[in-house]
Image 1 (tube, helix red, strand yellow):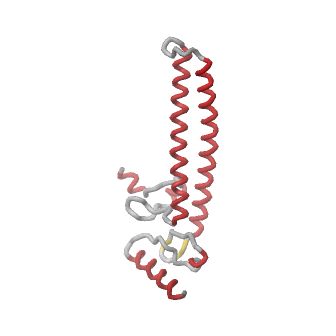
Image 2: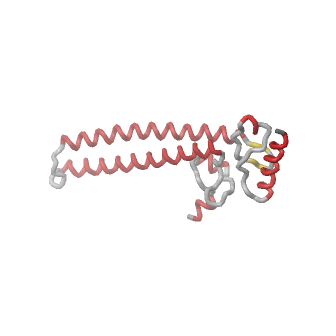
Image 3: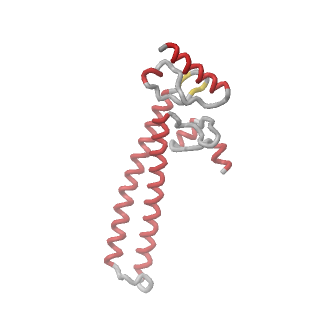
Length: 161
């Protein structure tokens, strides 16, 4: 078993030396299932993973609350449109109700998209690829992940878009 650990550690160091981000953690907790994917030099940074998990779960809960609220709003607008005159063109309230329904529907889609991004980030966290830019393969800066926990790209790649 020590030979396997040494081999994994060697792979980690050689990947780092080549400028590639390590996907396998070489810390002492490897055999305990260390989820570490962040390394600066040889030091595993579990605290980043724990903080990322907290931030992502908070974002997920916030998105679910917003989605529940918007779904309720959407249902109210739909109910109001049933009670209103069916002729939107000639009814002064009809255009307002149609606009509200469209606006709330767009907000629901936006929150659903954000929720999907957060859940994809949680999957990357579990897979050990969280915090690695999907375009260039470099680590995403801690400040960016603090501000946007579901970020898929580093600042450089996001700016290049």
